[in-house]
Image (cartoon, rainbow, N blue to C red; front, side):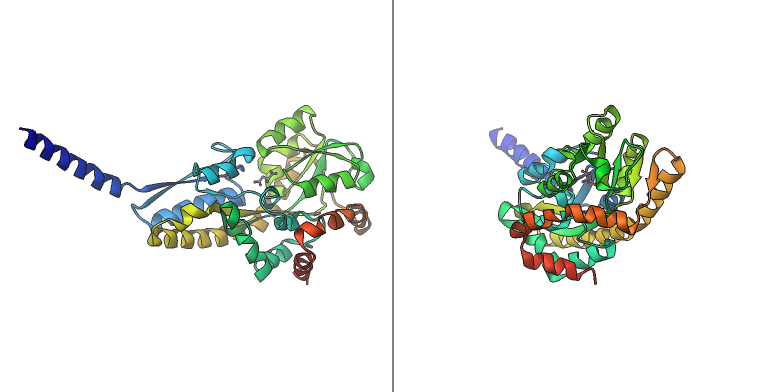
Length: 328
Ligand code: LMR
């Protein structure tokens, strides 16, 4: 009798082990933006490709709009293994590496093409591995675009127009210095809180890409959006280095290949989405889009210039030089 019980138990355990072995691995990709954005679409493409390349082996769950983790928690969640992929803005890595602050220097890149060239250069690619000591592996850069500045005021042309105004910023010391340089009051705040903060007047303004201004409806609660293009907002897709290195080789290769293709796909959408969303904001007629003259732009550039000196030592003068070369 005892032997029979033992045998039945062993067979049952065997079955459940086989079943467990056949269960696809659940992989979570969390992000903070809407689905109708370059990052939102890139994450969905990654899911589609990963599941196609690794049938039955992985299931990718995508969580948009800070549903799973918001800005404050997502990095820790990767390190704790609670989520496998996130794609924070390059402004949100301060705590882990000073070098990535390069992307926040105001007026460093003339346009998204220059950003792309730098990211693809040996110096840019090396930054993907700049946080391995902290357990973070960078898998690629995803584009969003150049940032515009917006406020709840009728006039927004020159730095004087933002003196004393409160601006929401991403968690970045460079962006903090940038707004202090123009005489404004920056406040670090999670992305998911920005709409309400603008609506209730907790802050007067913000800076973001056309895609984020449109998809988060910031244009409904701002009066003027100045076309400053003063900085870039792009992303690094990251994962937990230990988890990644510990994956079965075939799974890692399949995920890497899916990520490369999703990266190309997402990056191919970014400039089209910028144009499309700028147009939609214009058509909505709620916020005025203020174009700026060369003189206006030069005035912004001049007051923001001291920010470069302040962060040069941490970033590295050579890296700044390399980035400047990408402007051609
Ligand atoms: C922001 O916080 O404004 C952006 O980084 C959000 C995003 O992921 O595009």
